[in-house]
Image 1 (cartoon, protein in one colour):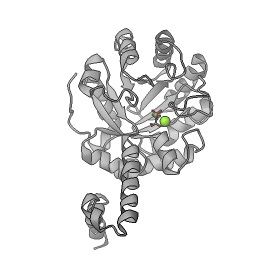
Image 2 (cartoon, helix red, strand yellow):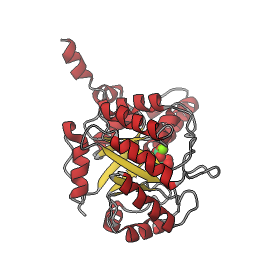
Image 3 (cartoon, rainbow, N blue to C red):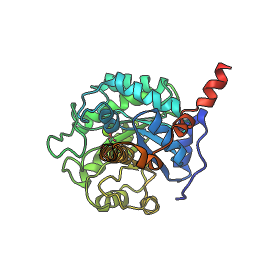
Image 4 (cartoon, rainbow, N blue to C red):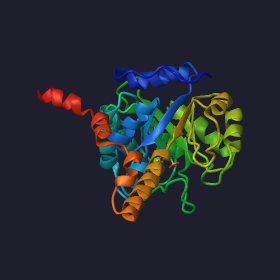
Length: 294
Ligand code: SPV
Ligand code: MG
């Protein structure tokens, strides 16, 4: 597996991911929750953007426990898609209901230009994977039905469907995670996401060894944060999602900025630490917009 693929071009975002998978190039993805955080991810050099349910919920100051609905996720994902040229992967939780809802989810996100839809095998209302209690898996066969409905609802060849298993999150073993992922690929998932809340990559590595590259594998190394992406690629990972680091960085930065302003009685002493207004103009392409007006 090689690193640093050439960047995707806007028009064919989903096809770019498929090609990267076929070429065994590790796809590095950054979590975002709005147009600004998506564009910052793109400018940093990430290959794609993850429209995170955790991030979108947190931006509304809500916990990631299925409070927001399809329309809100779609609106946030569309803003991200419009802000960047790279592919956007939509975190669609449990697909907002049963099989027909999963199909409708695919139709809506695909027609908004989203490159990949990810659905996970928990019972609605799902809780964020790192919430300690109340994690409940949906029966694998029922979830496979949802994936099949979503896969069949696609109208473009390249749009990707990612089947995410929360088996390890819910305390099941690797056998069960493997059984589920095999079922999900048979049902039409183009890639699988194996989520883990372990403090090291051990269980994911074991999963990868036994998976034998049956289909592309996505991982989210939040709790096993020190796993180097080159090592992950070597172990058989095709896509790595840094799902919430930007959100957490934002919270830290805003907190320390505001406490400094209150402490010093002005923003003077920290002006050099925060982005200048002209930087925000540049990120949001002010000149391009003023050019349009002209
Ligand atoms: C998200 O970013 O919303 C995810 C990843 O689903 S996690 O928060 O790790 O569950
Ligand atoms: Mg999520």
